[in-house]
Image 1 (tube, rainbow, N blue to C red):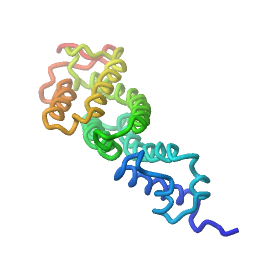
Image 2 (tube, rainbow, N blue to C red):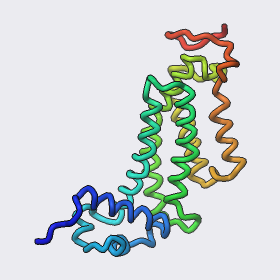
Image 3 (tube, one colour):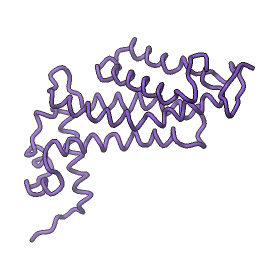
Image 4 (cartoon, one colour):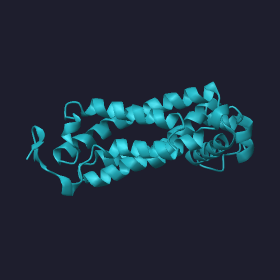
Amino acid sequence: MRKNSKPPEERRRELITVASRLFQEKGYEAVSVRDILDAVHGAPGMFYYYFKSKQDIYLATIEQYLSERIERRCRVLEDANVSFDEKQAAFHQLLQEDIAGYMQRFQQGRERSITDDSYKLWDFMQLLNRLILPYAGFIRQGLCEGRIDPSRGITHENAEAYATFFLYGAWGMIYNQTFTEGDTRLLLHRQITVLYVHPRDKTMTTRKTGGLHKG
């Protein structure tokens, strides 16, 4: 029996990379397993050794895209040694580059199918759930350091609820393809930054156990 010339993990990554490109170019419904195999000069048995179906590899392409980008940002948000400003920049990049890039990569305009949307919707739910706790931790750090304005009603206790509310709201804007419009993009940016206090403008002091109060 002839052995596969590539190690299994390398072959699997190759299939995912090729499938990702085809899904981006044509959309989910227009790509067949045969198209993927033709691009890598493979046989059907080889595809089904790694994936159960076209849906299976489609989800794998999404997972790979997100894991390479989102997990990197989450690690920054979760790192206690990273400054608030660095985390703020990472979070902006998460929204403006990674998630928006995801939509541009996997969404094919108004002709997209219900099948396409159902997979993206499921995946975005997983993405948002992954982001809530890191973003809530970022908010609490901002409260402790006097970098988030407590007059907005955000506290250590409701930080997770606020993170959930904000992320799902931001997702709605992005998912409906309004993120790339100039006015909406600016609005989203303002909604993020309106919470922050610039270091030179701080008039509050930090109380470790109770958050911030007026100095």
